[in-house]
Amino acid sequence: MALYSMGRRRVIALLVLTSILLVTLDQRGSAIIDRTRSLMSLILEPFDAAARVISRPVVNAWKGVTEYDDLVRENERLQEEIDSQRGAEIVARAAILEYQELLTLNRLLGSSSYPTATAQVQGDSPSNFQYTVEIDKGSVDGIAVGMPVVNGGGLVGKITRVTPNSSIVLLIVDPDFSIGAKVLTEAEQVTPAPLITASPTGGISLNPDTTTTSSTTTTVAAEPTDSGTTTTIDSVQGPLDPPVNAGTTTTTAPSTDSTVATTTTVPPVEIIRETGTLSGQGANLPLVLRFVDDSSSQGRVKVGSTVQTAGGTQSIAPAGLPIGEITAIRQQSGSRAQLVEVRSSAGDLSKLNFVRVILYVPNTSGG
Amino acid sequence: MGPLVRLFPVGLCVLAMQRTFLSEMKVFGVVLQIVLALAAAAGAGAGPERGAIGGFTLGLMYDLATGSPLGLTALVYALAGFVAGYVLTLTPSPQWWLASIFTAIGAAVGETAVPVARTLIGQDGWFTSRLFTIVPVVSGFALLVSPLFVPLGRWCMCVKRPKWKAIRE
Image (tube, rainbow over all chains, first blue to last red; front, side):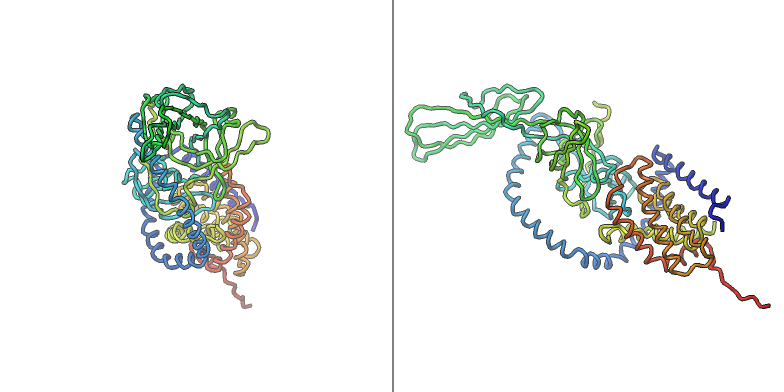
C-alpha cells in the first residue's frame, strides 16, 4: 500500500479544505451552524441524561476513591476560613448597605441591581484545551450569549453558547477569556495626615480624577458627666455629595476642662482607579491584567489591590463585579508595561456547583 | 453512506459518555478522550482514508456538541484516524497489540494537534508544560480501550477483518 496514493491525497485535501471552510464560517458567525448546534444538543439530551443516570454510582465511587483526602483537607481549611471571616463578614455587610444607600442616593445602578438566573452546573469541559462548564439554563430562561456569570465569590465567566435548555460558560481562567477590569488601590499616605481644626462637616477640596474617602473623627471634650463618654463622628464624603453628617456615634469622655475643643483628624484614603484588560492563563494559574495606559500603572498599583469589572457600554459585565485581588506585579522584559497577576475571588472553578447568570445586556448605544 | 449510518449512533453514545462522566472522572487532572480513542481505533481498524473520514465525522459531532470551533476538532480527529491507520500499511491484518499501539500513537498525535490547531486560529496559550501530562494520559487511555474499540471502529466503518484461507492445489 503506497503511503501517498492519489486517492489518499484527495481525501486529505478534501477534509482539510472542508475543515478550513467550516472553521471560517463558524468564526464569522453562521445561523445555520448555530441551528445545527441546537439540533445536536436536542438529539444528545436523552443520551446525556441516560449516561448521567447510569454513571452516577461509578462517578461517586471514583470521586470517593480519588478525592476523599483532598475533601477532608479542604473541609478543614474552609472551616478555619469561615471562623476567621465571621468578623469580617459583619463589617462587609455594613459596608454593602452603605454602598447600596449611596447608589440609591445618587440614582446609580449597582451590579446587584440587575436580575439574575440561578443555574446548576451540569458538566465540566469535555476537552483538555477548553475551560468551560455547561449549565442547565438556556435561552428559555432569558440567557443570551455574552452575559456574565458569577458565584458567591465573584466573576466566574461569561456565556458563549446558548441552547434552549442549556448554556456553555467560558470560565475566567480560559486563555480566550478577556474582560475590562479596574483596579482600586488605596493610595499611600505620603505626608502625615493633616490635622484640621474645623467643624466636622467642613468641605474638603478633592482632586477631580480621584475619589477620596475621608474618615473624619471628631473628639469633643464636653462637660464632665457621671457616665463619661466621648463623641466620635464618622462621615463618608464623596466629591459630589453635599456636606452632611453621616453615621454619627456619640460618646462623651470625662473631662475636667470646661471649654469645648474640637479636633478633627482626616487621614486621606485616595482610591486610584486603573483600567485594563484581564485574561486567563489556564487552570491553577493566576489571571493576568494588562493596563490600557502602561505609564499610568507605574508604581500606583499594589499587591493586595482589589480588581473589579470596569463596566462601560462595550463591556459584557456591569461595573463593580468583584474579580479578585492582585497577588504579584512583574516587569515585562523589554517593555515598560507591568504584568499584574490576579487571584480570582471566585475560588476553585473546577468545583462549581451553582452559579448566577446576570441578565445584563450592555447598553451599546451609550444612552 | 453505510459507515455514517453506523458511526452516528455509536458516536452519540460515546459523546454522551465524554460529556458526562468522563469529564468528571479525571486522571491526574486530565479529561480522558474517548471520542478521540474511537477515531484513532477506527483508523487502526479500517485504514488511513476511512480512519480519516471516521475521525472527521466524530470530530464534527464533537464540535457541534461541545461548542468548540466547528471543523477544528474534526480536522484533528481526522489526523488521528489517518495516523493510526498506517498500521495497515505494515500488515493487512495486524495483531491486536500492534493495532493498540497505533491507536495510542494516533490519539497522541491527535491530542498534540489540538493546541496547534487552536493556535492557528488565534487561540494561543495552550502550549504549556501540562501537555506532557495530557498527551501520555490520553494516549494511555486509548491504548487501554483499543482492544474493544478497534473491532467497533472496524464495524462502524463497514470493514471486515481479512481472513486468510489456505489454497488447495
